[in-house]
Image (cartoon, rainbow, N blue to C red; front, side, top):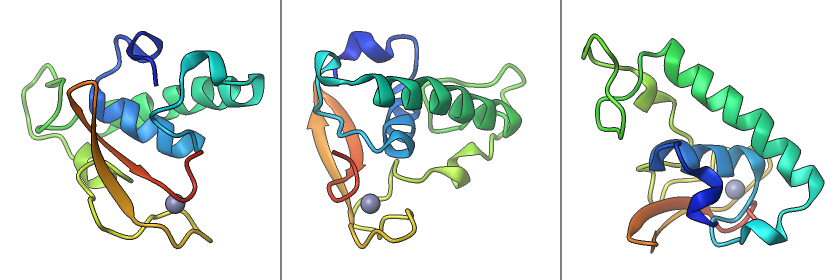
Length: 113
Ligand SMILES: [Zn+2]
């Protein structure tokens, strides 16, 4: 995934958004079709709203303004879940961790294409 594509969104959020969108993190921006683009837009909104509702995440790229402890990390589907079972229903995959562009990237090799 081209970093520019998700610029402004922290690494954790990018991981989560790609998971919900079922897009492989190594996919290049030019390989994204309209359907996938729509999913990215939809789930970017969803994940960021979830993050805001839960006050951000303490281990994250962004700290919330009150610097209180955010509970968003409890909502992570892929981030920091290496070797754990994929949370997508009907998927038997495991979460993999890889370094892509010097960032730790978590994804399911099974349902993210
Ligand atoms: Zn999966």
